[in-house]
Amino acid sequence: MAGVGSGYVRSTLSVVSALEAVVVRSFGPNGGVVLFTRDTGEVLLTRHGQKILNSLHLEHPIARMVVDCIQAHCSVAADGSKSFLLLLASLLRRIHAHSKACKEMSNARARHLANQLLRLCYDGLDDIIVHQVMPHASSLYSSGYRGDTLEGLVRGYMAGRVGIGQAEVLVPIICQFCRKWNVGQGMAEPIRFIHKNFPLLHSTVLGLPIGRSCVQEGFLLGCDWTMFFERKSEEPIRVLVLNESVFVVNEAVSVFENYVCDSHATVHRLCVCAEELDVCVLLSPVKCPDLLLQQAQQKRLCVAECVDPPLLDLFCQLSQSQPAPVGHVATVTSVSRVVLGGHRLGCVGLTPTHTSHSSSEHILHPHTLLLCAPGPGSLDQCVNACQGVFTMLRSVCEAERTPQNSLPDQSEETPLHPVQSQPSNDKSEPSIPAPAPTPDQWHRLLHAGHVVPVGGVFDVLFHHFLLSSDWVAEPQVRSLLAESVLSVPRTLHSHKPRLFMQFQASLLDELRSGPSLKPWSGGVESVSCKQQLLASVLQCVCTLLSVDRVLHTHSHSHITKTSRHGEDDEV
Image (tube, rainbow, N blue to C red; front, top):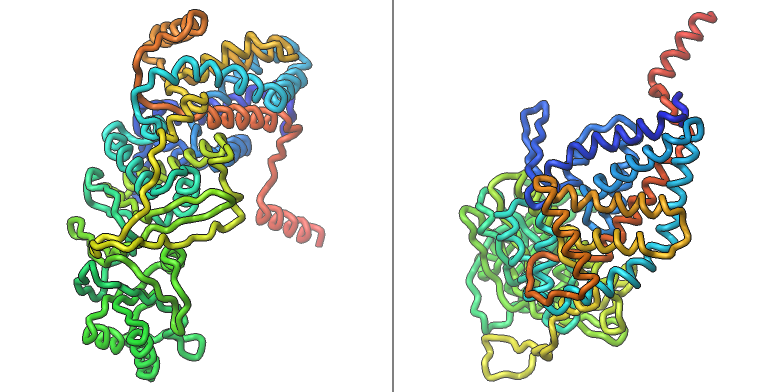
């Protein structure tokens, strides 16, 4: 049993510093890659902070507490696992330095500082950021930006998570994916929908270079067609999605090709139903009997077997399918086969679908993000980074809630309705309502101060306004947090410390004399994500320093063996 005496803060700092040393070498756009090896010989190469921390075998309870706090933060913002550790380690070092002066009261002093920091998180943090940082960030950077704000957000997020070459490929693809989904004027609903269903809206291909990644129009099935026949685009294409229970016998046994059972009646019923519904495509969540495949070949029906059931559920939702005796029936625009190297995937084209919530409407045009990579490690890193982008964009949209851009509650299912095509002489292309021309909706975030350039702008502004604020707190508490915040940009410029000093002096000079109005471009980051990072770290510090005792207990099996030996001795 270890008490929380003068050594507890020091031991906590040692644990956090050890975690910091693992991730700091992969921090920032110039960071390296962390190599993990297992006893089996398997090798993992990654720069993703969460993946690095999850790959560690952590036995110390404080280390597990820290990682749990990071996971909770990243589930909300999907950003800042490495910055979290850098800021946490810097705060603990300064708290330890301040508390050492109190000698016997060192732990009480450390806890007092942590509570004061937590009070700042609840009482003063929002006021400093909303009324000081954001207005000045808007005046400094809103007029001179010459880039695409959406691309800047994605590029700023990708910089520290994948390599430079990978980011150059993925950034434009993700931006294209967002814009192709959003046919209407709103941005929040498409981002919310993609974030919620991302595991089903992307497909992966292993063994190809990352440059083969692309955005595929339509809905990729995740498997190839068992039977495929070309369809003319002007013909209406009706799809029958079979229920999983269609081929179930006695509620227990599924009929597969090697099973000997009386399936003629079931297959005949399916063929009659398909003919009545004028269906030319069958999608099944299980393997179909040979007899059904023979009938489908004779009738020239496209068949896809063993399609993931959640994927079929989302397809039915997006296509606004109608119930049928053996499943659901829907109308699609096309069926095709996507060929990438030696990989073939079935694809189904869908009409744009509009969602309605309150007084706003959004038109969604389904597409699939196709990600390629030469190895499993790089492919997993790309998938994690792309999924994190949409979590970050969703948090940005939530921070910029307006009557025109309000996000629905996540517990509510937004109804989807197909967009009715207007009559047209050209039957080959369905008519899509054209959105009214509007300014860049993402650029509005820059004008409002919701995003700032990457590289330490937020940290320097927050440091300056925190020290000059009149928030009621001990001066050393404000100084402690303000100096700790600068640890993140200092680490970014650790190879050339003079660059950071020049950057900080230049930014403070612009605050006094006014913006330079020079054109600029590049990556940007969300102020709301930075605020969430500060709040999460301050809460983690308070949690760590509120521990009273660390109890080292034996495992249950060891206790049982000990008790049995005791009983034997008594006998």
